[in-house]
Length: 259
Image (cartoon, rainbow, N blue to C red; front, top):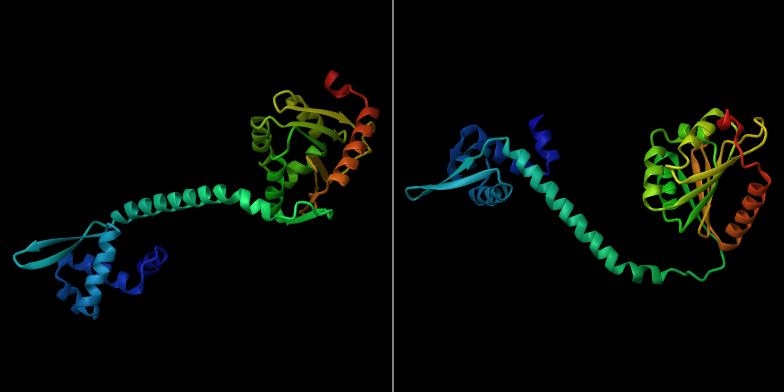
């Protein structure tokens, strides 16, 4: 059990053996730990160096002899805190490097191709990733949305998503089916920077969602848990035109909210 824990903390088998042996004796010379573990003294010294770097072992002189002392096991928590800090620093450094090189990476893309770029996403994690791209919208997102099915598809995701969309100053313009969840959500339109119009009949409904923004179109099937992101200026312009034609044909008033 303890060996499994130390292994999970990236201790080698020999490091675990030496650390546990030193914990048992409290403090001792390299010769003592070598006898207890069956490892040679050169290896013991190397491992002590590693354990001291991890902040788990200290050493002191007694006469002409060097003794090693195992610190309290709670120092494992301190060790993990330091490892976490180092990992965060490493990732931040990598992010800075990526940011520096991003223009060069982007320049390698064949941005002048006439072919649409299509990306597929599957499962809840993939659909969340697909939705993150909508937060790159420059100005406005046009959407066909069924609030009932999108909240069922990604529970607890959208209230936070709406908040981040607002923080980025991205306005939403939606065409919705006439159901209770969609109507109720419109009560938050002002706070969530959104305007909507409803299909005229309750029988007119749909489950998937389509978002149109920039030169992109995100199509989401909530029941099949898949999303398709298409980047095409030509296709996006057609979808924007179709959206606006339908939008202008729909009534501005929402009778249920006037009641």
